[in-house]
Structure formats: C-alpha cells, structure tokens
View (cartoon, rainbow, N blue to C red):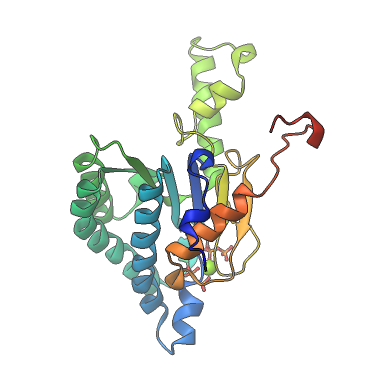
Amino acid sequence: MMDLKSQINIEKLPRHIAIIMDGNGRWAKQHGKPRVFGHRNGVTAVRETTEAAAELGVEYLTLYAFSTENWNRPKLEVNALMRLLVETLNKEVETLNKNDIRLQAIGDIRKLPERTYQALQQGIERTKDNSRMTLVLALNYSSKWEIMEASRRLAQQVQAGELSPADINEQVFSNALNTSGMPDPELLIRTSGENRISNFLLWQIAYAELYFSPVFWPDFRKEHFYQAIIDFQHRERRFGKISEQLVQ
Ligand code: IPE
Ligand code: IPE
Ligand code: MG
C-alpha cells in the first residue's frame, strides 16, 4: 500500500491549518477513566500533529485548546486543564526550539490563571525567533469575543480621529483581529465526529474547507492528519466561480 504522506502534493499544501481538538472526554470514558485522562493523552496528538505539519512545510497550525465557553465545565476539570497547560508548555518549549517552531496565542489570554499565562508568555518569548512554522494556541478564545474586540478597537480609532469609517475594509478589519498578519486557514479539521464550529475563527474560515474526522483527539495521529490534507487537495475550491473558469 502506498503510504499516505507520499500522496500529498507538497506544492499545494494549505499554508494554514486549524484544528478543533475534540473528543478527549469521550475517549477517556471509553477507557473507563476520568475525563482528565483524555486531556493528558491528547498531548500525544498535539505533538504528532505539530511534528507532521512542520515536516510537511505548513506555515501556520492553529489548535483550539480552550474556549471561553469551557469555563462552564466542572471546576475540577478546568483546573486540571490549566495545570496540564502549564506542564505541557514548560516541557515542550525545548522541542519547539529544536524544531524551529514559533509559539503564538490567540484569545483573551490575560484572563487565564496567572501561572498558565506566565507559562504561555514564556513559551512565546523563548520561541519568538523561530521561523519554520508558527504554532498558534487558541486559549480562552471565542470568535464572537475576537470580533467584538476588533470592532471596539476600530471604533476607538474612529473616535480618536485616526480612522475614517469609510476606510474600514476587509483588510483593516482582519488586521484588528487576534490573527492579524496570519493567512486565513484553508483547512479546518474537527475530530470526534461533531459537525459544528463552536465559536472558532468565524471570520477567518469564511472560505476554508471543512474536514470532520470521527477519530477522538487522543487517537489522532500523523496518518489521520495526512488523510485530511489529501482530502483537501482533492476538493475544487471555486470561490464563487464556476468550474470551467478555474485555471488548472
Ligand atoms: C476537547 O475534548 C478538549 C477541550 C475542549 C478542552 P472534550 O473535553 O471536549 O471531549 P468531549 O467532547 O467531551 O469528548
Ligand atoms: C470546542 O470543543 C472547544 C475546544 C476544542 C477547545 P467543545 O467540546 O468545548 O465544544 P462543544 O461544547 O461540544 O460545542
Ligand atoms: Mg468536546
């Protein structure tokens, strides 16, 4: 059997892939373990996916790790997740540096617990000169929050006389988002068989290809990631045009 990696056309890689990492809790339940066990095992999938993306030459990989809605989970789980983040960030920064990967974050990160915030800032600072790939963690992130914040920022600029309402266009608006400077994701993957977006990158995925995998996140491996990219590369991205208008 031909291996999956060799079926990928490196010339037509998405520049930016975003992933909604879902299914940790159900995976744990399947194994008769508490939900936190699933989160811990999800770290392996993060490592695998990050490595696979960097090896292929993807420029941006964005991982949805904690939504603003996730604060509504039982306190025990939220606390365990925040601790796991600190632990993982501290442990993995060295590997990121070895692989020339830069860490960034989107979301209302200032409202994370102090220790999580510090670990994140340190990771960002210690990897800031790396250039092979950017790994973006969405933490305390929600798209509606991000869009609201961008609107507020632009309104303030208008009020201060620095910006005219007539000058607000797609580019200006994009630049006011947390993802300013990043290309929009061409491919969005969600694991665990849920078919929804859950408040993730609503503006940025306007024209992304969506790929839903039934695999629970802790089981997600390089091969699953390759499969998503191969699927993406077989799609026709028309952007409103008709098939015949597309060159090649
Ligand atoms: C995704 O897995 C991880 C986070 C949202 C932090 P879940 O914890 O949502 O797992 P399920 O969806 O309950 O199985
Ligand atoms: C979305 O997963 C958020 C993250 C992956 C961090 P959820 O499991 O929280 O989403 P819903 O609640 O099922 O929509
Ligand atoms: Mg879930």
